[in-house]
Amino acid sequence: MAARYVQRSGVKILARNYRTRTGEIDLVARDRGELVMIEVKTRHYLARKKPQDSVTWEKQRRIIATTNRYLRELSCRPPPVRFDIVEVLFAPGLIPRCRWIQHAFTLNEAGVGWSR
Image 1 (cartoon, rainbow, N blue to C red):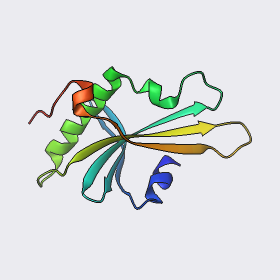
Image 2 (spheres, rainbow, N blue to C red):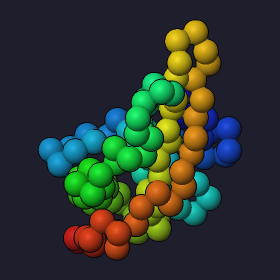
Image 3 (cartoon, helix red, strand yellow):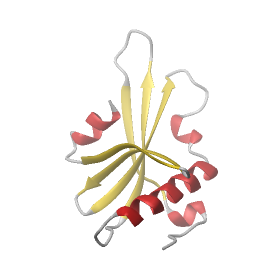
Image 4 (cartoon, rainbow, N blue to C red):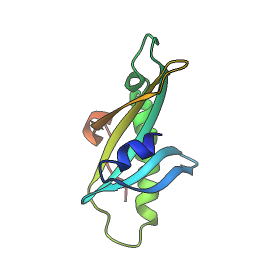
């Protein structure tokens, strides 16, 4: 559902559930000239915390480490990278709703950089 949601905006999905020993990226996509790493978080609409709150500093670091692995596999010079979150809120009997948070976090906010 999250993939279809971002695709409607013209984003091209390159990979789903990209896994390495460092972690997983739910969706790897291309949006214009950027490579977009998307974390999908699903919660019941009555949950106390927003889905984006579960993308902690530690989770961000794992996503960045996994992104490093993905970039090393590319045979070309990597484009700029952006980290997004898609929240999926559901309620029994209702159609789930999505919210796309672009530029949800950066390397500086996570306290790390690219390792090449």
